[in-house]
Length: 451
Ligand SMILES: O=C(O)C1=C[C@@H](OP(=O)(O)O)[C@@H](O)[C@H](O)C1
Ligand SMILES: C=C(OP(=O)(O)O)C(=O)O
Image (cartoon, rainbow, N blue to C red; front, side, top):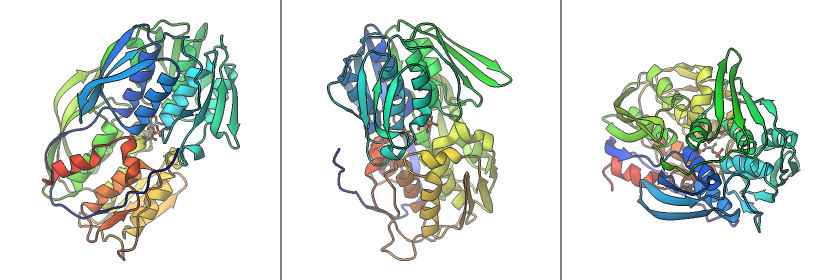
């Protein structure tokens, strides 16, 4: 895929954030809504689907394998989509390679789907995705019988030749990864017998919740050694009407922005608060953030609330490592919060950050240090010495560019940092923001009165 030209942007402070916004649909739930609907027998309807590039890559791949997927309406806060599924076992051989763009979730979950179908698919991706480890899914899916040929180091491009019928396995996750767990469960859907995933550390449980909603026989047993998830194969999924809640990983940027910019007082509506995703809120509250949950309710089987966030002085903490799985995508913006806290925040136990769209530990260290924020890098995290609430200095000279490294979360996090910096922060490429939050800069305009 040809890369679009880099979109450079300079961020300058815009004053307090005020008003109310709604974040787009949850990315994890949007991917799964499309995949499970594509495997159901009949027509599903999805409201609030995130229309980011990652989710659109999933839709395109499912279409290439026979599902009919159409947008029927919607607005900036989310799309309304209709999916006519092919039934479990009914995926067709795609005619061309599946182009996954920047999306790890699309790649790993769809590899699981292909693994137990009688089809062969080639997966390709952009430079970021092509550097990410796929061995973590290649191993269990190969044990189930799939024949997978990958590029050196277990990377993309790779080809999955599915086996049908596949062999059920019991697999203990060697890394805390909802993508690996979900890939195995998806392969298990079309595998005779019971496929089991043992998860020593709990990760996001959207697949389990949604598969149950679609009528799959799935059980979750809590044990002293973690969770054992069992799925009975050759399932028949029933079509659903799904409302996707707002993405807590997108709300995260506003929670931090309002906390650090003096005078801010905002409401972020419709934020998913599943405990397997809510770690950042817990960490920010430990730092002294002023976050109130309003109107708690259930949307699409997930707990949701509106969040009121007011500026508050933040204090450094040792981020509890057991929060890591429930805030894994939020570390970059947590590091920004730490840059404004009083004292030295230490966040460790987050080695997985090394293998996201970029090495997020190195990327944020480089970015924050370039803005005058003292950092110390560990193999599994970062220590950051904050200003105690004052503006961070910003780059020493105007020619310094902050590298977003094809990583949406680095671009958005450094945008937030630029809202309270003494000098402008120029980001070399904000294009990747479109993967998960296409209306991010519109929402920033709304919250800062520039819309
Ligand atoms: O299952 C998912 O939807 C996701 C799981 C996480 O990845 P890992 O499974 O690699 O931890 C997360 O970082 C990613 O943004 C989305
Ligand atoms: C890690 C992320 O996504 P993915 O793994 O799907 O590329 C993310 O959105 O931060």
